[in-house]
Length: 89
Image (cartoon, rainbow, N blue to C red; front, side, top):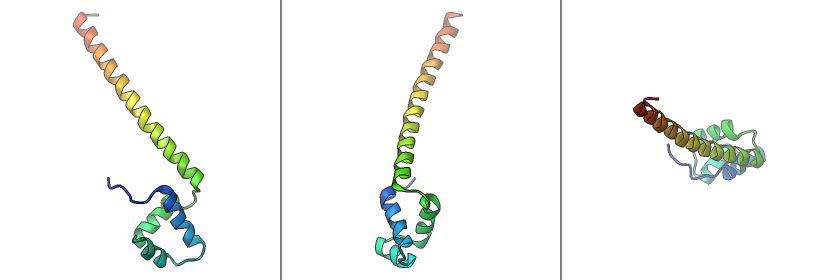
């Protein structure tokens, strides 16, 4: 997946510029994005504030860590099952 060159905070500030009355075409030209990108961002981040965006980012990081922990425990569980099968328990 392609990484964006804008952070969530920057995206939120770009969306707020349109709320202040600047034309969407001017905003897109100024920041070097397409209209489609702007409207995709608006659908994703439209009603969020920086606090919400930071919380989502924090939850995504926590989710990644939990997936790693689950993977480790799953591997240990699989190794223990193989050991029990070999021992005949």
